[in-house]
Image (tube, rainbow, N blue to C red):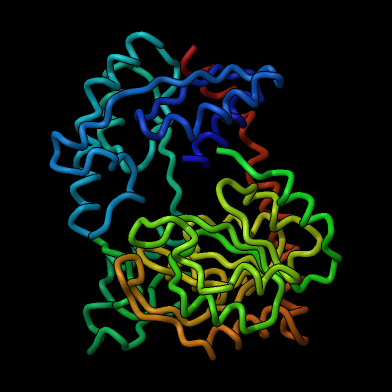
Length: 373
């Protein structure tokens, strides 16, 4: 949801009037952020529709995939989003937009856009590399010839040699304690040995192993896997022991800004959103599910800007625990020694390239204005 708002802000910064459509329980995520853009002169409004969770047999508060607790429940959630089409069309009749930007999980949006005679841009968070890999798997089916789920096979048709196992393939068919965080960031020296983390679902054992590496870190704590408050998911005394060499913060944190700080030496990511690349810092790869294992190959084998902890699928609903030795080894490889220097140099180069990737946004806006006045 936050990346969608970032897109809206980018468009609004070029004079485009934007309307963000979301559901009742998700609205607070956008409200304060949109309010903060008003002094910039951005025209972003929010429209809210009711999510039919109860009608679909889902818990009343299940208005995002993060609230699902099983694969069956996740599938039901995405099927339920189709029920949003009618109220969404009502909003389009009122707003009369010139273009529709809709998430990839709303395939019905293409039909809706055609119905209203406007273009539909697909907000596709999946990397182009993983899309190409998925298409190769669909066309050539090399995974079928593998003798077991753990046997490596080559993805055909790519310029680089990429190998993975069947287990690693995807299914083919607010804002709060900002001052505390910034104060801690600015107190850090630029020694490039500190670690910050992306979205991860980790248990207490894995947290203890990260602590045992002795490296400074920033940890933004959410709720535990079973929904309990964040204090329950921390090992006993963890926050006290980390006081002198790290920061444990709760609630919102500026994830896109933290990796850019001079003191950050690596960014732990599940390779869902690989925003760490634009920050130009090495990545510590901890994939969980879906196409994240394909992105892991891109980062470690093609771009060579990160190190894997050796995670195995699928961790979203209770997968294997990563061994402590793997975590320690990966952290040392990405922060210490000659290889770390090469990774850091390559990461900086990729970061510079990533910053240029959206320079044609203005051209896209002008094209849409010309084709659909």
